[in-house]
Amino acid sequence: FGSLEAIKSVLNERRLDTLPKPLPGQRLLEVGCGDGQFAAAAMKRGWSADGVELNPPAARKAQERGVSVREGHLEEIEFGEEVFDLVTAWDVIEHVPDPAQFIRKLVAAVAPGGTIVVTTLNRRSLVSRSFRGHWSMIVEDHFTYWDRSSLTTAFAAEGAAVASSRSYGLGRDFVAWVDRWRGSADHRAD
Image (cartoon, rainbow, N blue to C red; front, side, top):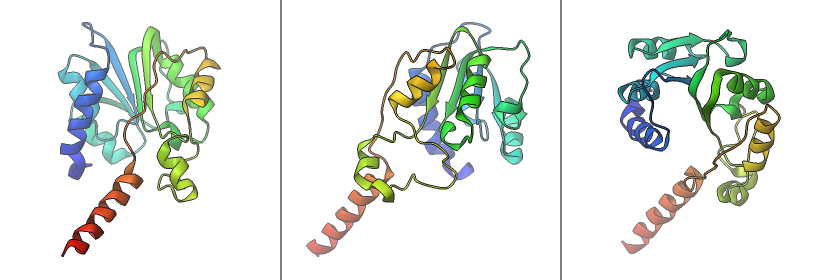
């Protein structure tokens, strides 16, 4: 994670700019917190942040940043009566073999009136439709692929309503294609 820290810090600040501002004492849970960069940035903005992380070295790094981390799969962690005002899962749901159970735990972890934020690949995006079977996001650790309708349906099955949905970016496949095209165009000009 260290080599990407500068890039991720920009992304984290942009994400925080789109999220609700915390009231005193409000709690955030980041599922898949990695080395804690996002959670630490959220704490600087007033959130009390906890994390869930599978990777022990990453969890230790998050703890060094002051994030309270529970190690393991979200589906196996017991929160008891504990709930959070904001629950985030940045690019995690596609890695989960049982998304219904994962979503059920997300919904159970959020306080009444709270917010859940999930980001994932869009299987109906222009890049996925253009590259089809050659889309670089078709990898063995992605168990599921989502779109607005499938996410809305999955969360509705657990009693949660989707309040907002957005799509971002072209995807690295298009960017790589444009970079290759521009590179070959530069060579033709020589």
